[in-house]
Amino acid sequence: MLTVRELSKTYANGVKALNKISLELEPGMFGLLGPNGAGKSTLMRTLASLQEPDEGTAMLDEIDILKDKDALRRVLGYLPQDFGVYPKLSPLTMLDHFAMLKGVVNKAERRDLVESLLHQVNLYDVRKKAIDTFSGGMKQRFGIAQALIGDPRLVIVDEPTAGLDPSERNRFHNLLAEIGENTVVILSTHIVDDVTDLCGNMAIMGGGEILLTGRPRDVIERIKGCVWSKQIARSELQDYQQNFRVILSHLREGHTVIHVLSDDQPNGFDHQEANLEDVYFATLINHGIAVSL
Image 1 (cartoon, helix red, strand yellow):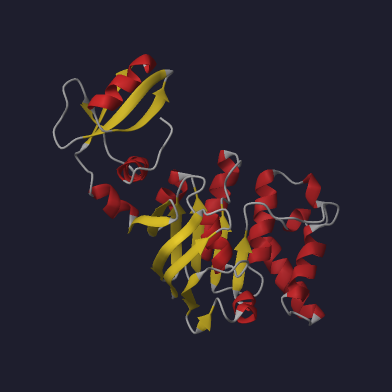
Image 2: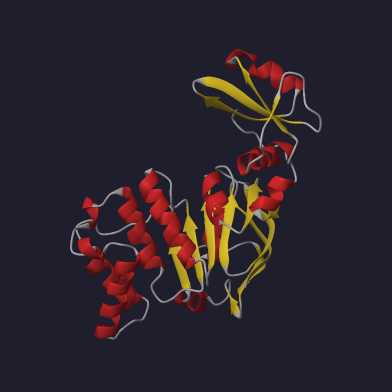
């Protein structure tokens, strides 16, 4: 169990990145959604012991994350959005190095661990190739392999599928789902479909606060029957925003389609099956957080 209580962080420039964040996470996939500047990365770095909050507590079972960083790092797997590697080295060499840093000093044990990880992330056949020859998805799979060294109890991944093609994204989803069966996995992302596909529980952040928590299907149920859609001319968007609660606009076959939230069917609108994207934008708008439509 990961228990976070009243975490707060204000930067020197006055930006309140975290405002009394509280969460309780059991083993499984937990999705953290939010726009840029929501505070997701600050929360991830804090839970990964990379920066200090101004106040609050965070416990991973018996480990005090904020006070016993060494104990946390022995059971932590962390994949930041941007991670550095020596590009000319192979995943075999890099993982061996990381395993040694994690305390796996026995050479045979380290070899078995590295080979097992390479098989798990489907990189064994390219284990001796330079990492700078890898595709984006292969690099991400290497990143998750290094995060899994030491059988972690907490895994944090920050925007792991950004820039991946559909096939690599699907492979990465399957890998994350496998990891999340017995481990607390926090998936920080702005890609709503990643949370819909993977996560049993989730939260939406905005302005440094937790705006909504719950199971994806439960939060979608809250607006079921209240989402309506209509195709409009792009030039009409501002007028519709003034007269309706527009929560989303997107292109469908080159035409602008808007979603509005209403208890009753507005004239000229069709019923729209609600999804997590509707929940996400409705939540941000309801809390006064500007979104680009």
